[in-house]
Length: 109
Image (tube, rainbow, N blue to C red):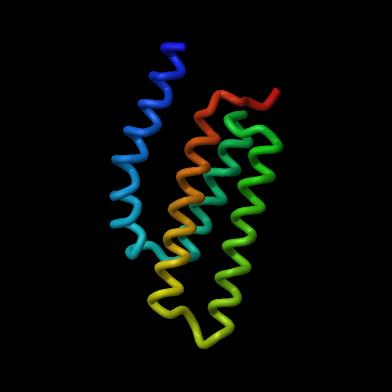
């Protein structure tokens, strides 16, 4: 039980530190760079066994939803500042979920 509390505390601490950095770093990355980075992290998690098949499928589904939303935004005269902010928020949330899933000790068998 103590190790579970330690793990949760570590995840909360990591999220608290990583979230402001991700938010401040987001404007410097293109959407394509962010997408490539998220895809790379999912692929890496599959290769090293940190993500099981179900986790990877769920994360890839979320990734595809964001990609479809981006395409819809772009169809309407490019991305507005509000749309870019919305995509950044969604990418940040997906990034946090990838991190949590990769460290939840549910490994591929």
